Length: 229
Image (cartoon, rainbow, N blue to C red; front, top):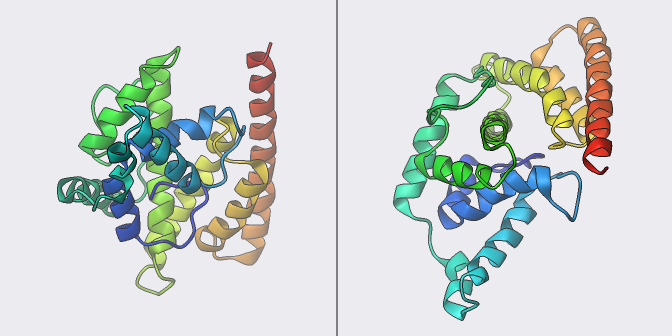
């Protein structure tokens, strides 16, 4: 499932959860930025579960709606998620989208796209918010794939590509308030273990990237101060 900090869960588990509660999962992506209960998100999974319950009872408060979270995964939604996941698997170094997102990226399923568009329209700058959420979804899917790959000689190259892309993207996640500084620093160490093989170069790279993360965190705090005025 789409997470900020991912446990070593399988893609099947992620897709099944999406089949059960697409609205909740996509809402969790938005919640990662805008939750009133917490300024940062460490794991979107608990939020998704909570939002699923809230969404189930929001329509009319009936027990029938409350039981929707217990329904089996929709095969069509699972298939859509699988197809979207294959895009990341085929192109693990997928780059962030810059500027307005004019059409659905291939790594975003049809249902995800509909939900992201719906949520973004509730924001002051829908185009900017849509781009942010689309890029955030790509990041989480890349992280999901990276964590799902066993550390073997056969997967080393793909893990390196994914880790390199994730390292490059970490500061943006911090700037956007989607990842706490300490969590980003922890992930940085893990990613660099795959991204840079030479220990000395890895240490130098980590020092440089840590400075980027610190700057990103300062940028986030500055933005928060402005928004709170």
